[in-house]
Image (cartoon, rainbow, N blue to C red; front, side, top):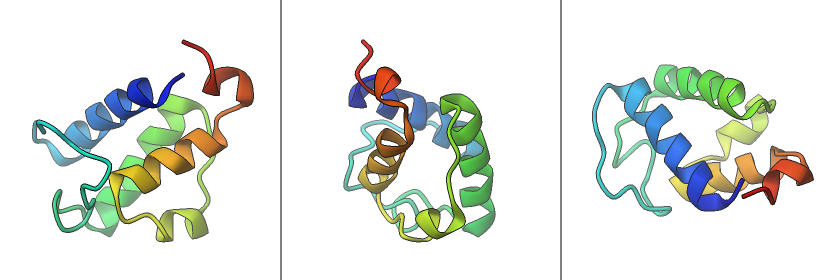
Length: 87
């Protein structure tokens, strides 16, 4: 799964979590400042990300997430190598 596909899935998850549609989410978009996520939103989003990508996210890892790009990096790092490079 390439980064573009991961970003599309992540955008869908964020829209579901927040209940709004987002146009043009960038890797530099702040989850907290720009999208307005709070800790409860972050927890809900993390659960959906884990289910969607079949990965496990650790609390310590999530605490360092600030921007969409940070979350994309974490998801890519957690994906098995075979899924990371699949088209």
